[in-house]
View 1: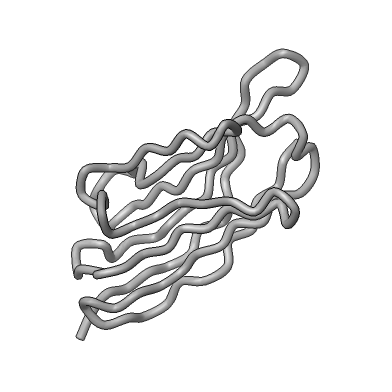
View 2 (view 1 turned 180 degrees about the vertical axis):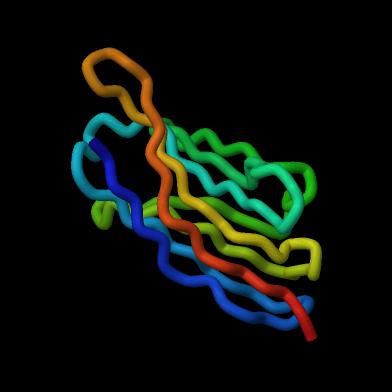
Length: 119
């Protein structure tokens, strides 16, 4: 199994920046992709950004050019750098890991961290 713990989040003014971290533990060798999702009140959870083991990244259109996903394999950590934050970025942000267990693809989620963009 894979366990994920998010660090970061909080309250920031519009135009500000935040960095989220997600630390993976457990069967980390089985992870083939990690990503960040978010869920705003009354809305469905949506993909924000994802990075695969070969470094391929993809982003939601709404965050392209403002958010950057990266990873530090030595620290088993994935980051989400969020710049030029907007009130509509307010949501609970979740880290997600895609991994394989017994040839079966599985997913693991972190507990979520609140990001609030407000003046």
